[in-house]
Length: 336
Ligand code: NAD
Ligand code: UFG
Image 1 (cartoon, rainbow, N blue to C red):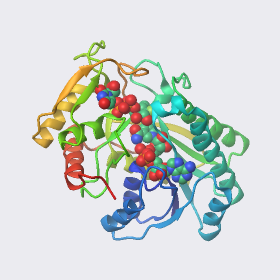
Image 2 (image 1 turned 60 degrees about the horizontal axis):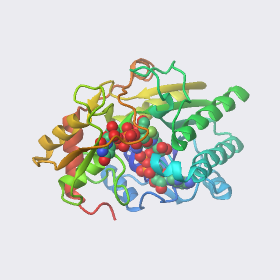
Image 3 (image 1 turned 30 degrees about the vertical axis):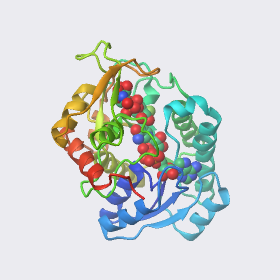
């Protein structure tokens, strides 16, 4: 079985490639390396001892994508390629709609042309907006506060329309909660360009001395310690959820959404303390203002993925922090 992985050199894509290869799938990666480097795929090969066929190609490049489908028999696609910075999306909405929404439409058109109608799509818990917690798949979606989140909602809707127009499609929408952590080899992990936007890479760079101080965004929320609550999930657990979803779409037709989270909420201070324990370093942090657009608290009800995909998160927050620190210490300057 051959799986096309768009955005396969990125953070979640690379960990998923490892799990796919370890499970015996052949993997073809399409990535334009906008937010990654080819060396990541060499490291995937080193971890697995297997080869990754790769194309430097933008998903908006129809001819480039058609060549990939002409040269390979693709059984299913896992679609990670996209831009993901919430703040940037509010300043450059058209870039986000072009890259994420238009790029996805081109991909779906090329898949249709080559009669490949099985796809796992990287969606996000952000589509739930202001629903009560824990989030369940049956809740309404789309009340989203930023363009990035709206691209996820729109692509989910597009895939819904596609299935309603042709019931041969088999579609899995995975709504990720907060992926953090790294592969335990320390060879791959989250390696954002510039100053990180997200909590874990920021903490990790403060701990290694590359950044002076972490600002905790808000200490006055109505939560147990005043800081925001999120559902953090080990990226390897998340990668394994893709294997379960692929197995399902290969067997069935239809469209289903699944929450992929631990089902537990941790505060920002919980994460800081767990990271201090794992790294043996005292973290320099201050409590600052709230960040615009942040919700106080959310976490997953992951029952549907547990029962229908037979997927369960394995790793706890201590293991997540240990693996992040291992990756950071082995790659103090990132992956080059
Ligand atoms: P990432 O930036 O590390 O990986 C995305 C990859 O896609 C990168 O390698 C990038 O170079 C590539 N890419 C981007 N636009 C492309 C294009 N037009 N053509 C080809 N390649 C392109 O991000 P990630 O954290 O691995 O996220 C993967 C997916 O999961 C994204 O769609 C993201 O929106 C979604 N997601 C991520 C999170 C998170 O917190 N990391 C949460 C929810 C959903
Ligand atoms: N935080 C800080 N300081 C920082 C960075 C983050 O206190 O320097 C806090 C945030 O306020 C939030 C928590 O840490 O309470 C997590 O923030 P992240 O930026 O790491 O993650 P978000 O929950 O904001 O967003 C993530 C993904 C999005 C996705 C969203 C919903 O980055 O792509 O989850 O699932 F849309």
